[in-house]
Length: 394
Length: 153
Image (tube, rainbow over all chains, first blue to last red; front, side, top):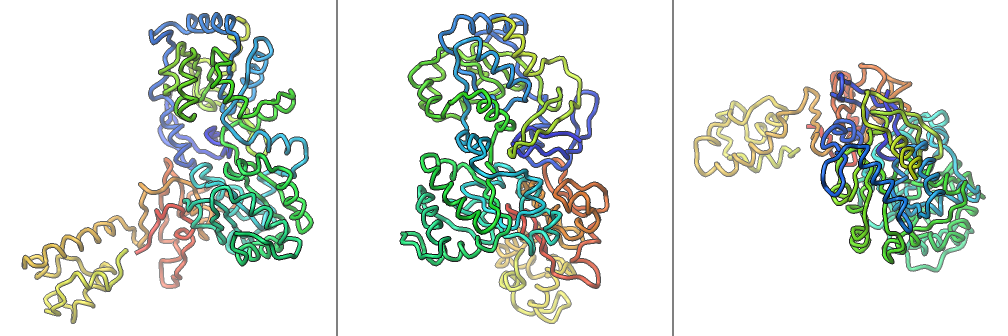
């Protein structure tokens, strides 16, 4: 059994058929996981400096020189690396002036969860107990393809033996029709930025009053009556909800308090990076307060003069102004395969593929640690080894 | 899949009986149940005025060619391997109560649906609830598919 380190579902039931140095076939993984396992050896990253191929030692040496001489370093992409590598990256951050960041908007929500201000539980608990599942602002069919089938809606849990047919009710709230919207038993399509109005309306209607709102009152009342039936509810907070409650967290907490008067309602953040929870946990433990705005400002205002990018591709995933600002500073890319970022990087350092070529521990989106054992031997260094070498040098 | 009426509209509608059936409507039904092939209708191939309709019919029945004996068609190009059907299929749940039923990958080979290389594959189709003398119109795998990759004819 292998662990798939692509999204934060961290499926650990992947069956792999392998040859001496490659993976021939696999079952149970979704398309995202399959693409990762079958192509991990395609287009591998070569060590280079200014586009010229060099030895790994040389590229590590010049990366150390750059890190030593920089004013402030941006360490980016830690949500995708394993626990050990994250801890070493934090040690690097202690040694040199730096800013740690990732493109996730969930950090404030995870911090509140870790501070026990927002109630949560494990996905295994959700599978055994949940009877009302709400996907708010998220399309799990595309972002976390096995989320519905492994944990929330379709499996037959210990106390939900009749599964999705009778025991569970799936509610969706989103601004658009998505692949998942067809499966919801109740789908509420709202306009962009109407989430806050919906939260306010739900708080009023849960108190037994009719809300004064621009949203369709009948739908709100139907939704409320469904929410009132729940014994164990779960809100899977997607990107949409996270953005909506970023400035209105108290309102969301009020809604949760109201819901918890009826039954037990918990929140699961639909984190994207494989170890995003681990990253947020370390940030919380070390009391580092870094918001997405701070990170963007640091890039846009050239506060950072060097970027250390690990297992991530910000040049293709960040918005255009940030991309342009990022390309003005030298980049050090650590990755197993070539990406757009690595092709624009000043220094590239190859590393091994997680959970295929080295064993790794990752935190799932609910905060449970999952361990993936390595499948194949490799000469490439793991992420932690590369970062350890950098830490020793500076 | 097209309905018998849609197929009938594309046939010559002359009730010439050359196929051996009493009417073109009967022929349309038998085409869908795979008891006849398009080639059994001679006017469709001999007369030029039916050429465009014939092409449309061929396009419809090309999709059915890959259907298994229970009529299950998997459009693997649409499937993204979420495994909803694996967990929802009642036969999978009955045959594998500690694997598929709990949302995990199947733990034995008795199951019908399994995700291999990121797309769904069907084995043991004779166990399907839509097969055999006691068949029912089970649609567990169809309604749970977010990408409409599973179809029955």
